[in-house]
Length: 105
Image (cartoon, rainbow, N blue to C red; front, side, top):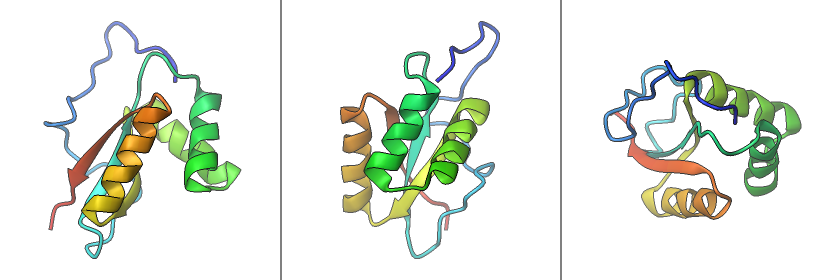
């Protein structure tokens, strides 16, 4: 990811509003994985992680990475809690900042 500008702020994950996500999770999938922008990882690496772990196409991985970069965060998966917890742990193993969040019913 690109470095955060000195004047740029991000909401903390526990206080973030999720209403601006471009891919709204289904109500059948009450949990979601949110990947956050960070000052460490390169954009190309984030695309690589999304492609290799989630199996996204190059175009989708790039679109999601740009959403993380431009908006500060992005929902990359939704589903049952246990599965989403595994995805969050995997993102941490790749060195990405990710959190688990419950979708609004």
